Image (cartoon, rainbow, N blue to C red; front, side, top):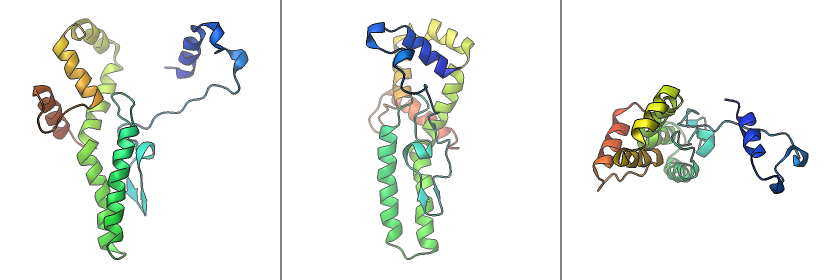
Length: 174
């Protein structure tokens, strides 16, 4: 898909009085890919911990990443404090390398599900079936919303929560 052309088409459909037209451009339309689903690894190497977009911590279901960046920043800070409490050398490095395992445990399976889901929704046949048969079903759409927004409750959740959490634990973290 040509995202720049898609943006131009969308802008062309807006009310001209809003001023979103080529005559008001101050620079060409540019874009960059969002690094999603842990597609930037390793998250720790040679004294550097990756957090947020630099670590591909964008939800592949919905493109949201601020909360993952904040949560990963908290994890990184905790790991750094623990590492600095140890003498330089192998013990400190072990602690710093644990950051990757913590991230994988927290988000790895869920982000893997998201990458799979993104491939599915990119398939026109799947999307036609999903919109024809899935959208009209309230429970299926509630499940899909909970899945896409990562709104599960790990402790006291309903059946949807238990299914989503089990799927995220069952798939590989890579």
